[in-house]
Image (cartoon, rainbow, N blue to C red; front, side, top):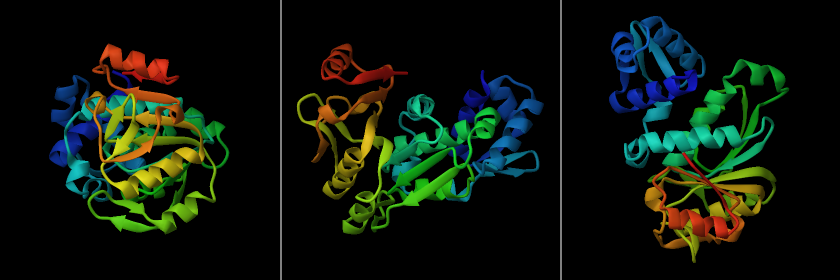
Length: 264
């Protein structure tokens, strides 16, 4: 098990119980307690958790979130998707992130990658610039020196922690993104990608318009599903990162539409 896999597993365990003990985590992951202690120390340096005597507790900013962000559905799938997306990014990229459980995991995977000493030393200035309308993502990343964070402004939707409205649009109209990473609620081969709320759809659409490359991140349960508000057509999507549960015929249709499909 690699360090990044161990870190992802530790954060998953922490998200479930809110605290970790070194000995129990070591037994669960079949590694030495010394390895777990080092991992927890490094995660604490990244401010992804709070170190305690004998273990760790969840970082308050990261876990005091609405129910949507505490959902345990497809946790492992979303973490695999997030790790794959983080590896697609190039140090120095300006990355747009909308809100949602999967993009939140992408932000966390980016912090794990930014924690790598070799890449950190080879990058002058911030490793990534992140433009986001998600308050929880901004809160998690703002304290990390490897990131430059641009928050869009706007009116906050308490159900999702996303900022929407004309103020949000005004900021996005002034920036240029290398990559937009979008979480969605539905992917239909004919209608494109969708979400439940029209105001969030408008912001995600603008993120896509401002980006050189658009990466769609969603677990396979969203494939073939429709939602109320359309974000954009499939012709605007460059890459789909999903889990291995995607149906072969759906993957084929998306590939035929010119989308690179990565299943993990």
